[in-house]
Length: 71
Ligand SMILES: [Cu+2]
Image 1 (cartoon, protein in one colour):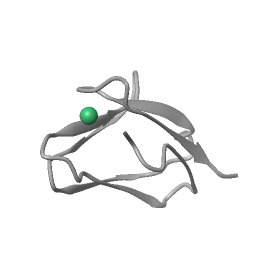
Image 2: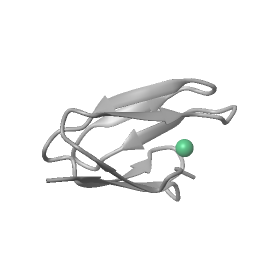
Image 3: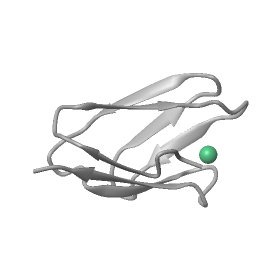
């Protein structure tokens, strides 16, 4: 699962995921960006103003997360 499942960010802030699993995850926004998070690695995405999104893992669709961009 993504922890925290829901985060708040400001545009320009760096969102970082850390993959503590022995297999890959891909944070995916439908119709938008995706971030590959290899096993044991960190991956980042710079929040933009339109990044109030729900995302999921392409490999494990039950893994869901949400980003809310603060005003
Ligand atoms: Cu996954």
